[in-house]
Length: 391
Image (cartoon, rainbow, N blue to C red; front, side, top):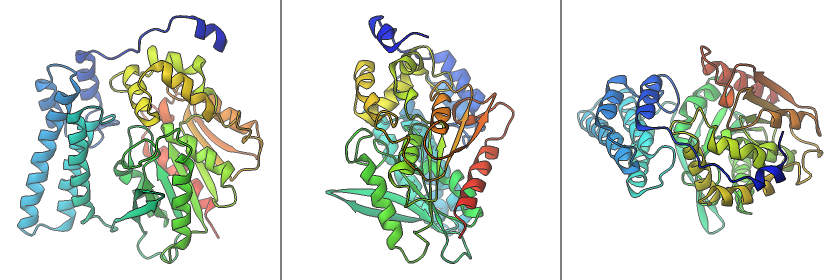
């Protein structure tokens, strides 16, 4: 294997992007089944494919937003006609999802930013009709505001809570499926945006980034409608890093941390990142170049060189944290992941407190495995967290 110095001396290949035809084919392969199109109707996806003449970001946003706005208008009309809550929740959520795909993976252009704003509006219309009810929390943070979505399990007094978040493209609005598993287990769900994404005003590498999480832990400890002394955290993809970090820095405040498809050291090194951003990223819709764009948006970097310079400082190994006591950690990933190295789970297990892990031998990013329902992974995670959150 080439050393970091050897890789640094080589000219770096440009980041790879899928072609228009490749994106169209991948879109239709995933429509109605796979991330980020799980809830997209196939006939609507076909409309976009037929109208997509380039990979211009604003065109992408325009086509998806058009569909989303049509569903929002339909839901508005049904609301005015007195339609039942479950119907309104479904149609408004569909409107949100189409606009969300329009901003995917990040709102990097004016059109994509507008699509993101549409998605937030549609989601919050849906939120008024969700069951269990969803509370939108606006939490003061230094001179800024953090936003989170809290749901409580029906009929459970003083429930423990799961604080959870996604990665660079899956934000708090995209966590309803995960929240449903959490709620069915009798746990409260608080979905937030990790630093550098969504409505989190702090960048991923900012010194204040970790404090955005501790602010939520402080808030939970003060609530009277749940048990803020029993908290588990679940971070997904590029957000999994924060779950592992909190497990070490906030070991006495959390009962368990799920490190789901992320990085702690190896995934921040040039020897891993250069291939991931150039020839790798096979599971990323638009290709490896789009993965770099999305992670760069979270970090506040615009080039591969800037990103490579910024992220090594995040290494938990180099910080000296990994040999410190930690809250229980469950590592989950696919052995074939080309976005986050499975070796980072092994590294966690080689240091500090004993850890638990589930590695999917044929799994790709976050353990996703062909022919295996992704709900199997969610069930494994939530069952583990429920066990850690027992009295």
